[in-house]
Length: 137
Image 1 (cartoon, rainbow, N blue to C red):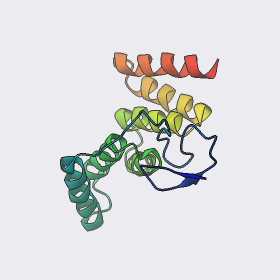
Image 2 (tube, rainbow, N blue to C red; image 1 turned 120 degrees about the vertical axis):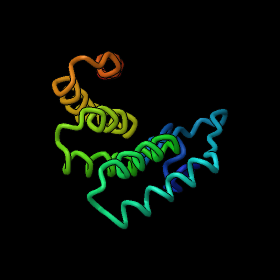
Image 3 (cartoon, helix red, strand yellow; image 1 turned 45 degrees about the vertical axis):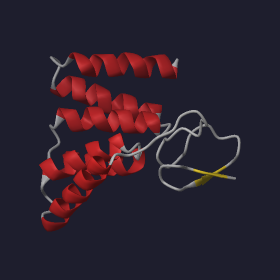
Image 4 (cartoon, rainbow, N blue to C red; image 1 turned 90 degrees about the vertical axis):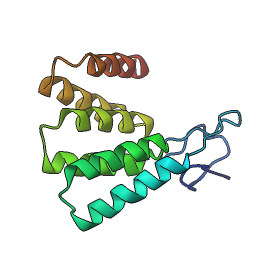
């Protein structure tokens, strides 16, 4: 068994990615989280604890978790943002990336299509969709 360097989840030796957070098990891919990201995440966690409906803090916490490659934890925050603000297109787009990294291509495609529908002017969303289509075909 190997242990994920990001979230500590155990995985089979032949696994290439962590099922929990999506981090790579590749030996040459060293990931380090800067102290600034850790401090920001702690600040956003405190803000969310103080006000669970603070979508800005939840969204920023999701971004911090993405920077840490903690895809499952990031997805949780984006899901909660969407519960509070269903039309938050960037939250849908980032949730799509998280689902993709977690090995859930259908859910990823649903979320990016939702983001495109909410804000068709964002070219980034279409780029993410093309990347997802390349992974699912």
